[in-house]
Image 1 (tube, rainbow, N blue to C red):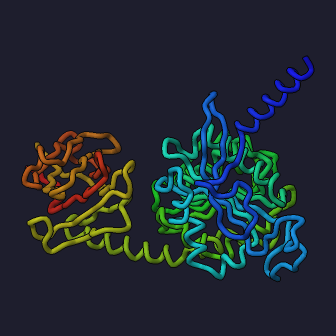
Image 2: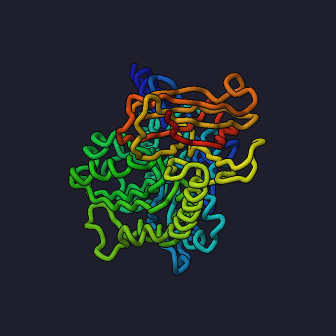
Image 3: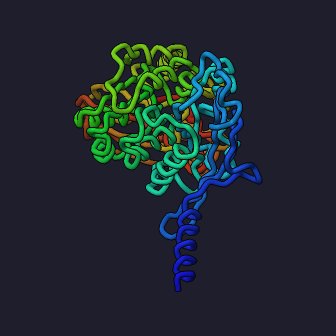
Amino acid sequence: MRLVTALVVLLAVSLAWADEAITGYAGDPSDPQAPGYHKLVYHYTHDGKKREMAFLLYLPESYAAPGSSAATQPAPASQPSGPYPMLVFMSGLGERGSDPQMLHSSGVPRELRNAPEVLQWMPMIMVGPQCPADARYEDEHIGRAITGLIDEISKRYPVDQDRRYITGFSMGGTGCWSVARYAKDRLAVYAPIVPRVFQPEVVSEALAGTGATCLVISGEVDPKSEPGSSVMAKALRERGVDVVYAMVPSGDHNLWPWYFRDKSFYEWLLSHRRGSNPPADRMDEKAIIAMASERSNRNEEYLRKLHDDLQKVAPWWQIDNTAIRGAQGFRRRANGRENVFVSLPYFYETPCRLQTTTTLPTGNEVKLRLVVGRHPEGDWRLIVRVNEQEVLTTPMDKQTAPDNWRIVEVDLTRWAGQEVRLQVCQAAMNAFRNEHAYWQKIEIVSD
């Protein structure tokens, strides 16, 4: 009977370990101790189903396994010999999958590879959980799993539990908020870059009273991170959370390289300790914004040129939510016609907007007339709004514009003589490819 009981207990312990375990990736060791990058797999259970999450583990140059002969050797002057601070890094949507090698293509691993002087200095253990292809970092079980992974790595390696930090960009930035729901007082700093707004009431409640600091970096012209980041910062501050909120003027969604390659970003994180007051001499919002000034200046110049180009086709109109890339702007000849302005949406979910506020002429018939085209191999959706009210939505595709061009007229007679806000929006459709819009005329006509 005692033997049976012992076997049952042993089986239960084995099953519990199987639910949360770390194994090597593709035959790699499951407990690496050498400095450098290692590929591993974290196993956990969600809703009774066993799941896996691949991740990168980086051990700094000064790292030596506790008890080894190397551990008795002096560490480089720029690095500690342990315990080590820990940085959790989460990537964007494009790096989802089950091969942690993909994480080297962007974010912290890529920028540190391109800035070896920073990588050689890096005094932190880094953990990079890779979001599975069928999930998002915002998913509840992913947030819980990453919290479990933080705990497991902290047990296996000499981690300074008062100097654990988390950062990420885009979907990974939003993932920082997701992890905050469960990690709570484990981490000293949450540092999302260009994240979406995510459960501000829940996240602010979870972090209230923990002593954690939130560094929120967003782009002024990035519709993914603004105004959502300002909403998050406000909710957190209302619950007494220490927040440094840096909205980069003219900043777009691609801000993260300017931070992940800069030693000052990591030094800022390392200056914070869990349970201690924020350092009085830390960089403020202005200094953090300045780290991305080169990107910001480039974007501002590009946007100014787009605005000036638009005036050649539609005087007094403005453009926003536009991609800061691609073949946009005024063209002497494009898509078979002369004097054309080309636009492109910033990303799939948010339309590019051409807009103006104007007083319409009086008359029996007032119209907005558009001479507009599509890319020969693309399609998009045209939306017209008057005072934020949608008055037209129509596809620009092979059926509606078989010759790539069409004239669209919108009746504005009911607003004749009134001041109105007009918006002509270009929304992506289907596979977000060749979503260019070609504008030859945007004009108001009346009888």
